Amino acid sequence: MKDQPQPDAYPLPAMGEEVPLPRIKAICGHYRLLALWAKIEADPPPRPFKSDGCTGWVDQWKGVSIYSAGFKHDLKYWAGYPGEDVERLVADAELMIDVARLLGGTAMAETMFHGVRVGGVEHLKTAFSWGFGRQPLP
Image (cartoon, rainbow, N blue to C red; front, side, top):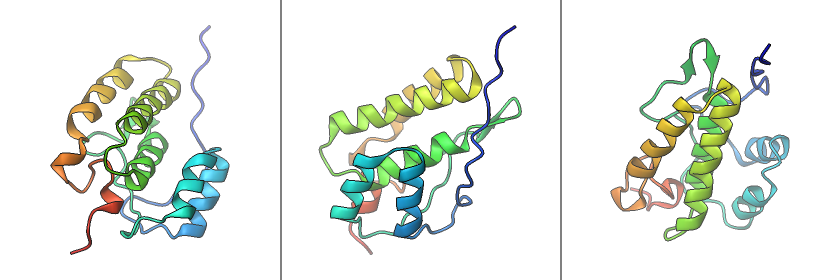
């Protein structure tokens, strides 16, 4: 019998909620995103952080929440610097792995990976592009 994936029970902020730096630090600590927190702490992005979950996608699939994967991916994109092509690839690959683990399969994870590779490029300068937290304030 195949083990069912366990949902991530760590309480994350709701979609659209502004997340202050102390809470980001705690989240990074919980998920062991220590290098990400060091990057944020050394040079916090000027825009406040808010997650929209799995941007333009579902946050639940077949009764399993994948919001935590989208949240962490948004955090990495928010903190990214222009030109960090390798870091963006790693963030996208980690999203794919997180979703695959949560869902216990790879089909949705691979689809999402290809979607973020196309839709998350920084030159689009959308509210969800790589480095969105470092885009100039209006």
